[in-house]
Figure (tube, rainbow, N blue to C red):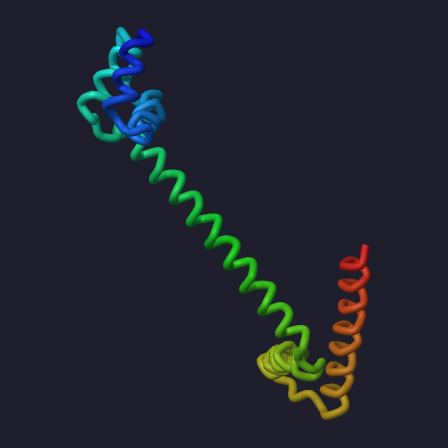
Length: 139
């Protein structure tokens, strides 16, 4: 493109329109005269090329996916924090119930002392896993 044509385009068209056509140029099919195609695109106000539209949609989809993943991580962290704030008895209750159900499926009804022993073991396991996770988090 000659200086005269560039000057005429700059005078006749807003800078934003020229910048947009320049940005879109790489998404257009190859032309015999890329400069001539750019001049014509600016003069005629060519619309965005489909490849550019697809690239924008892909970029938007990737951004949405990243936002969704970040939101999921935040929700997981919140749930984990809320779980860790619960009293130990409440945290082992589900595992204790699962153990009791398994014993009953086997035809056994655990005694109160067996239940207390299992509860104590679960609480001890919970205590050791809390210490391990704190040590890992402080490193």
